[in-house]
Picture 1 (cartoon, rainbow, N blue to C red):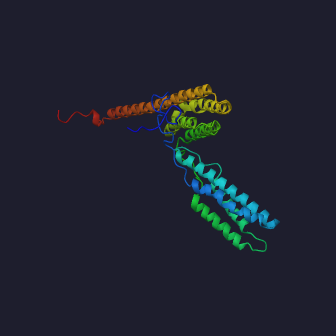
Picture 2: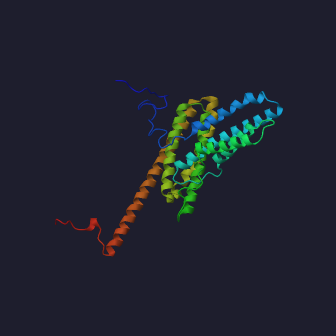
Picture 3: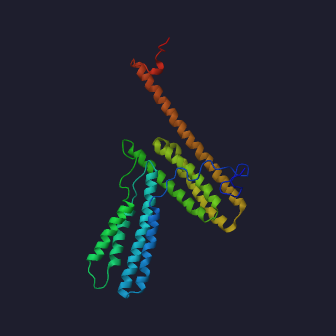
Length: 304
């Protein structure tokens, strides 16, 4: 019978090969980045201005190169705006992006096309048309930035705002860990870190569902995750230089311990939520009985 290839040094090792199998797919629960291909295309299209710049007079060269820089900046802002929107959409409690990157990208796209359309002796009508079309098409292709906070309304808005701040900071730690592990140049370690991050994000979702869990989870999301970030940065720097197998084994053992602890704490939070629900149900039943209202479970069987 055919078997799926795998081994001790494969990203997804088989059971019994010396390392534990992943508890979940590393990309479970993650959303595909929307419109990211079109955003990357925005870095390529402005490069068509390069030949024109060096075939123009000094004034035309300056305008064309400035237009190129503005369009590339617009592309970068657009891509970062899409990343921020994806992060906002993936969470149940989130603050709107502090900087409307996509809107700035739209405005800079119009400005870049205006500069690219200018020519010595030409009027401003044609460049203005290019600018308006660029802004409209950019907005149609990528939309606008989220303009409201999500999941923070209501009487417990202060508590949910606190949750949003803590998770924002925790997400920064996870991004720093991802950027650091790339320097190690090891795909298996990258996949292992992604599985740990998926476990951490399960805790994020639990806390977002019930902000009261923040008190119990704060130590994990602030102290332990900060320590994991610092350990990952130091490990990546050392392992990139030495390729020491012992250091790698110690780091993987650390990730295993952290993942087990985060998963256990998340399960405990869910059990606490269930216990709170059971208490609320019992209290409500007692109140109904005191008021003379009998619940279905308390009524005698009609056949007796």
